[in-house]
Length: 290
Image 1 (cartoon, rainbow, N blue to C red):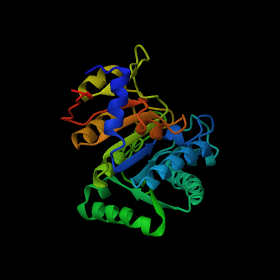
Image 2 (image 1 turned 90 degrees about the vertical axis):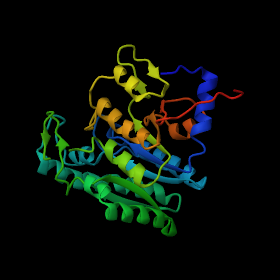
Image 3 (image 1 turned 45 degrees about the vertical axis):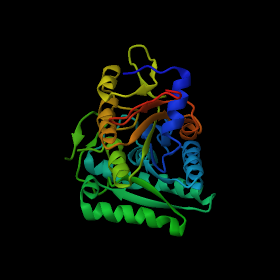
Image 4 (image 1 turned 120 degrees about the horizontal axis):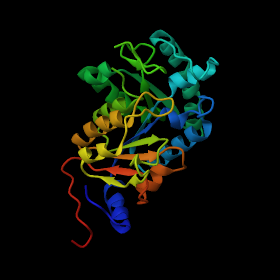
């Protein structure tokens, strides 16, 4: 893993991120819902939509993957924090929570004269050639109707596993708080950059709590983390790194950022070296003037 000084970091961010013509932004449960209540967080969703629209107006192809449906449904049903529902309960809660989330997304997109276009996807959809092709074509066609793609896992119909609050898996392979879904969607949509928004400022060294600025070897990243899931989500950092590795192998640059701060995606694209930049496989950095 190479070390970069502040000047090199800014140069690296500016050389890699602004040129991407297609990006996907994934917002985790800890970003789009309130930590205390589990209800959708209007401020964070509004900031997410604002950033997405600014990128869209720059001529970039942009899509959002959102998590938080199960947590929002649980909050709407007024369930206690320690309530551990089974698979059917969680699927029912997801169907309730998805409505709460999409209502906010649609409200904030409407301020820009846009419509939120809802996509509910399963792993099988992304792996099936015809389904994936239809997904790509539909996303591309949305702009004709001022639509913007907002994607989530199809929890109510999924027969794959969903992690329960007591740590057990009920059902049959989870997307992991949509980390895996994000990568699969990014590949299908030919995204050049995948932004992960979470409650962390980036990849943190769990021993020193120091943020790691750049990862150019995914194997090196694993020594910094413990396998712990985020608040309200079903993915841990170790599982997230598995998804990130798949994206990097597909040539997609990944940026792990805090979604609890304002405008972090736009700040990173402008050259501010926030978060952690994961460089794709076989990426070669050449310092300016070399």
